[in-house]
Length: 431
Image 1: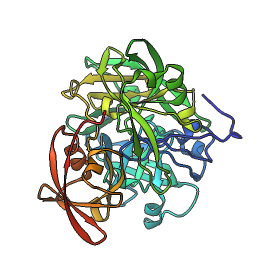
Image 2 (image 1 turned 30 degrees about the horizontal axis):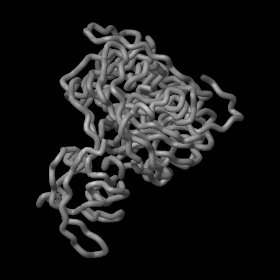
Image 3 (image 1 turned 180 degrees about the horizontal axis):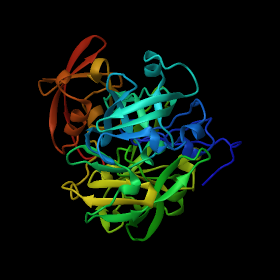
C-alpha cells in the first residue's frame, strides 16, 4: 500500500526486531532490520532516498559466472539469520545479511568511510561480487548497522527488496546455502507447496512479502491475518497491536511473561508480552504451540493495521524456502527440522556480545523472579566461564542454546566490578 511522501510513518526491524524510523515515507520503507534476540524499537533518521535505491538492476548489470544461476553460495546461520559474504568493489570479503523484511539495501556508514566510499546520500556505483555472480552499478543507503552485539556476528551490509526481487532465491537451511537464479529462465521441479505472496509496497517502490496465516485460539474460533514472511526475524510469530486487541489474543494465550527486548545505538529497549498460541497454519503446514510476541504499543509499526504480524525464521528455517517475487509466490519444501519443538530462553536474561570477535558476554537485562535473578546475576555482569569452559571458546548463540535446556544447571564465573564471583544457575521453562 502506498502512502504520500509528505506523511511520516514509523517502521519496523527485526530479530525479531522492529524499529521506529522518522524520515522514510512509509512504515514499510523502514522495515529494514537489525539483529537481536527479540523485537526492538528505535527512532532515528535514515539518509537518502530509498526510491533511487530501489531502481531495478538491468541485465547488463548482472553477470553470472556460468549459465543463469549461482548455486549453493555458503552462508552462516546465526540466530536463524542468513549471513553471507561478498566483496564490494575490490574489498576484502564482507558480511551481508539477507532480509526479506527490508524494502531497500543498506551499507554500514563506518565501513563505507573505511573503504573510501564517501559521505553521500548513497553508496553507489559499486560492484557486489558473490561466488558465481556479480552485480555492477549497485546502490546502498548508508546506515549505522551497529547491532552485531545482539547476535554476536559482524554485519557490513543488509540486502533487501532491490536485491531479492532481482532473483529467484533458494535458501537451504539444512546445508546453509543460498542459490540465486535469473527469474525468467527459472523452472521449479520440486514437490514443495507454493504459497501465494502479496507484496506490500511503500512510496519508494520497495516491497515486503505477506502471506495468509490462520491462528488457532484456546476455546475460540480461529482467526486469519496477513503476516510478513521475514527471514531476518529470529522468532516464530509476532502479532501487531490491533490484531492482538481485535481478536483478544492475550486473553486466550495462557501464560505470558514480560520480557526485555534488546536495543542498540539507534534502538530503545522495551518490554513486551511473550507466550504461546495453540497453533498457527499457512498453506498445508501447522505449527503447534509456537512462541509468540503480543505487542500492545499504541504507536509505531506494531500499532499498524496494514499487516497483522510476522512469520519469522524460527518457522521458515524448517523448510527449503524459495522466494519468487516475479511469480508472486514462496515455495516451501519441509526439511529435517520440520517437527522440532520450539524452546524459549530458560535463563531469564538478555545477553549481548561485545569486544573483539564478540567474545565478551554481558548481562544486559534480567527478568524478575527468574533463574538469572535467583542465581544473583545483575545487569552489567560479565559471564566469563560456563561449566569450566571459557566463553572465549564459545559463541553467543551456543550459550543461548545451552540456556534452553529444561532443568539443566550450569556453574558460572561472573566478573563484576573487578571481582570474580562463582554462582550456579538452574534453568526452567518460563513460558
